[in-house]
Length: 242
Ligand SMILES: Nc1ncnc2c1ncn2[C@@H]1O[C@H](COP(=O)(O)OP(=O)(O)OP(=O)(O)O)[C@@H](O)[C@H]1O
Ligand SMILES: [Mg+2]
Image 1 (cartoon, rainbow, N blue to C red):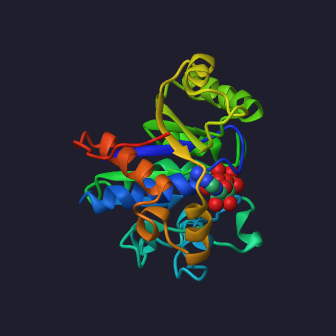
Image 2 (image 1 turned 120 degrees about the vertical axis):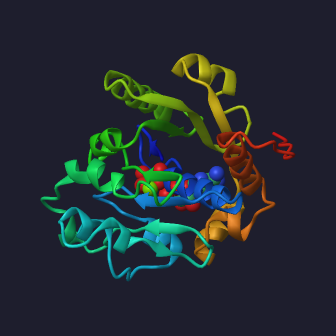
Image 3 (image 1 turned 30 degrees about the vertical axis):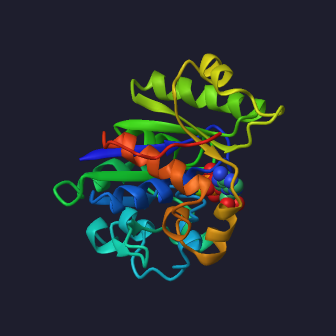
């Protein structure tokens, strides 16, 4: 079982969008995958999926009130997820360090677990780092985001964890975006996906579906499908234009 952490230095860069889209694409390629909301202080996957009343949440599991298998929920898109509790009172005094052992309870059930990480370097950043074997770092192609990504990268490397690569989101390819080759040079890591800035992602948010499901042929949908194909070493016929 592969456990992949989706992390970033800064909040609001596209981690949740990436976790849900990558998970959906892998699921459509026939891989059994579960996406877990591991943004424990600011869970948002439930809002993205329009399932704000999950009967069992990650927070119940962390408090020892349920097992993670009881918290797995099947979304209309076909994606299996574990959601967080949206009630603010639930986020205090959480035993975040239990995340690693809890995720291991999914062993034998799925091929891959994707952990949607926290807003930045605080919150459940270290819990995700402990629980996952490999990480991807999500960033916007802007200097403030890249500076924070560099800090996140150092923390991950300090823990001796593997970084699979960088996912650049909100990419417009105009004068103001830092060029992909410069991002790679600055971060010392490979870009594994360049996700274009795409209105379809906003539409998907309104529809409450992962963009890969609601807009499979949109520029962002195709970019996420290509990422998923690369992940599993599947030959992809998708040609992206930037
Ligand atoms: N490629 C994109 N094109 C356009 N909008 C995008 C793209 N990716 C993400 N967004 C939008 O950017 C916002 C932040 O995305 P998202 O919630 O996935 O980021 P996040 O890193 O998970 O945030 P947080 O750190 O708060 O959890 C959302 O409104 C989302 O719809
Ligand atoms: Mg998020």
